Image (cartoon, rainbow, N blue to C red):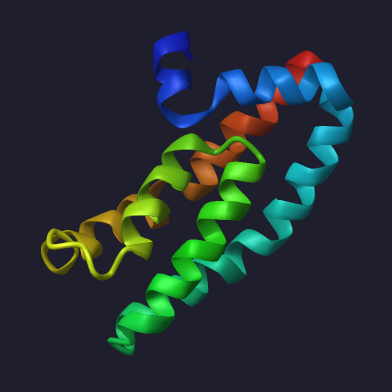
Length: 121
């Protein structure tokens, strides 16, 4: 994958800092834990949307944003950031599309992250 494309889905700067500080292998262990939790995170978002529970959707998006950011998943973090702000004027119009980006890309982005870290380990 081209670096520019990779930079749109991964926070390469943060990942490089993490790899320097704790090593790619250690970070990969955190990513594996995140991978185990991700279906629950995404499921909670989808369930809250289907229940039209805006408060829970925003709260779950906030949690997911932090978790995605902690492992360098830039695109997922950015869309979860948008999704968590239910008070924003653009939220009503945009939240379904933002959630769809997360649903469509979470596994793919995680796979790219793992490949990236494996290449560094």
